[in-house]
Length: 293
Image (tube, rainbow, N blue to C red; front, side, top):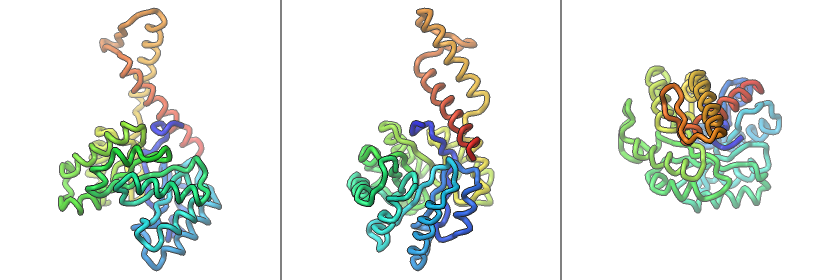
């Protein structure tokens, strides 16, 4: 699957210190799981959480879900050992917190290479500080291993001395900068978490806003939010049917030497066909992922 076609509608954080959560993740309908060694794990549980994650990865059973491990930063006592332990595992990617420069990405890449990480293991970057926003372009371009930018809007709002608002106006500039960087370099990008688990309506609205902005999906903090994220960030049946229709019409017109295609009164250009092909590929990837669950 291409980076864009791989489903990342729902990306659920799971504390690495919670063995029950690691087991439950094998049956949840999330597209991806972030097994967390950073914020969700207390300092005195860091090493045991690391061992539990390594054992869980060795045991497998996560199907086709994308499995990501968020390590601690290298300015902590645990970051270097986290990467050394995770690099030789079957994790799909390592997620580095508070990425602010391309040098930080290259540092992680060098540590992964030294630890024996396979070429298929990606790097995901937490985008959660003002400096990270300003350097989003260089971060996205830092390495071929970079697969996805992950918004950390909670830390970002704190550092901006802003407020969480329903429309998220205080962070729209930051979200836009990261989306631009991701798309310019062919990377995926997922939105930040919604903190109020009692606010189902607000969560759904943020999912819809995220899709409208161009995000591939949303990071989540509770399994109960998976279904809504999967629904909002998936192409609808109508979108897929329309995509097939215009792909076919454009191909037929091209074969007949026609330069202009009109479908149901709408002018269809190459840009519409390219987006239709992306939606069809995503729908097929979602179907494959759900079939493999």
